[in-house]
Image 1 (cartoon, rainbow, N blue to C red):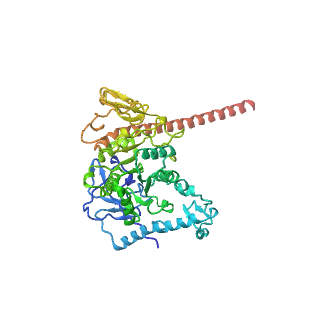
Image 2: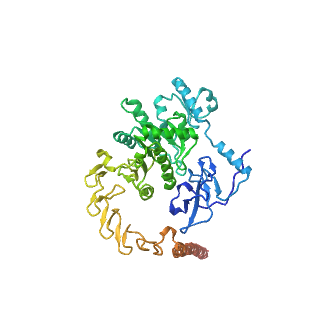
Image 3: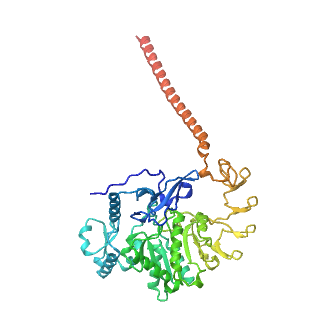
Length: 513
């Protein structure tokens, strides 16, 4: 018998984990920090609050930390809601049903048996995304199955598995080979021996391939990823099923200790964390998780090393720079443009953008990071860092100011560099697009001019939109009226012509008779 679905009065806004501040939903602090959060199939949920016109609603609610669309995970619970034993049991049963088909130990055991099979018996079910042992063949007889799985394919599971490209849930876009090799070479040149790959499966693969093919390479990697399918290809010390939005290890304390040992090996020396979160994820829960990983790393540090920071590469779009630096002030954004192999826009070529918006944020000094000159980067001696070719040094700002790879222009009135498509508006007293709406001053709301809020949370936004709506409705009515009159006029003209033709025929018959 299927468990009953829980029905609640839910806020209209959906896509909880991917909301920005302007969307009306923010992460909230629980009333009782010691109380555990309720669980959904993706681990502990997060507490959210809906924001309306800059004010928080009094009632908070729990929702999934990983899924942005409630169609993918419909968990919802008010913070002050009391659930019956029956509903709690039904929820637990639902969580159990959503678990992977095999435990972590079973996956490792199956993999060891799989690699011992001769090549013709190594099969992979494309529908179930599962390595098949001979005992499984009958169950998957009508499924599309690939045979002759080689050792190289097993070492590159991201090419064997279908990417989970649902933008609202997984957004599993994989590094292009160019960007992936750049990262591996950069990490090696910086002297790192261990890489904690948080949501970067392709980087994890290439590090392991490089280590197996190069005896001089001593770089190791541990992958933390929410995609449980990777459990089929790696041992416990190489992969942990993990949710980066709530710092949840699905395999419990054993997996947590694997991560802890990896970070604290050699007293924490020679390790770096590289993370590539889904771009729709909220920055705040990600920052909380990364700080927990940093704290785990610091547990192995001595008191003399308490000032040190865990080196981090956080790969994210450049327009998130203010939010990331808000939580990690020591981070700086590099000019290197990260590309993805299976993304329609964030890749090189005719189908992609000329400039990828994805960048690397890091607490490693930019002066230590060498970007490839053959890919269009140069060293600025004044900034002491590598920048894109079109990112020219501004003598007024005394910096290479471009964020998107294009040459920016300095505005003497704004006293800063702006995008090349922007012009200075004397009405708004700041630079903006030429066709922007001049509705307010620079530092306030574009609608009412107040300084305490922005346009998205203006209490007068509804009244300001009414004239536009009224004009649109008036135009629609006028257009409909004109169409009606035109259609009626056409019908009347057609009837008049018909009557004249009949009169002429009768007159002709009379004259001929």
